[in-house]
Length: 324
Image (cartoon, rainbow, N blue to C red):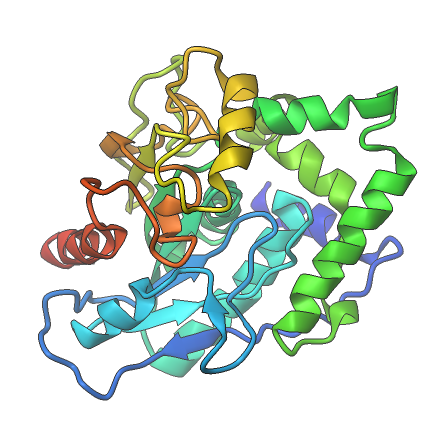
């Protein structure tokens, strides 16, 4: 069954979309390693969400998706990697891109498995890889993953009754290409499909995806998922505060979209607390919005909120103590 799923995904790529994407995964290193606190047994591989990137621009003005998080892990002994996937595409297409990069990381490091950490759409993307090659995944960590979908995506997909409309899709696909170009990559090497991305992270599309890849997803509305399946340990954490810093340019956006997700709050501006539940919940009520979860924009957050850099470092130590 897994082989059939992977064959279908590859066929989707072949249908009018280039399959020549390059992996371009990047190992983040630091010459000043100060401890082994975050030194996990297996490499830590980070996977960005929709509209995401690894790094855009160059020093000193470049911006990392995982702002200051990966260098800190490297300083604390972690073997850490940042992946580059299509900013806008389906879980399956992005999953195949990630699978290729996982294979390369395994070949480079000589380790048989990796620890996958995914934010937003990166959550179901890492689940796809665990579903098709479970023997190469030690753990999955989802950070506000769209496991049961986002009502924001569902609403956008209903615009004009034609799922964004052709003009809207063209604009988003252009933006996706711009994100890829800004990373110094060839946009043609990373397929762009705004409609596929929207379907994947919608409530309806997520439900269909979960029937094929149920590992770690709670069977109740807002319960816990399985902590371990097929030898893979699973964790999640997420935020529930849309507006966190008046200086953050993304806060007004999240203030509006939060009302679409849940009129009562209980979401990070894009994903509800219950939708983000996956595997063993580390914490599901952090005072972060959807950008704070990756320490964006540029580290702006609520004054008394936990530092995302600290949370990721602590989680790396958790994986280390688990023998992962």
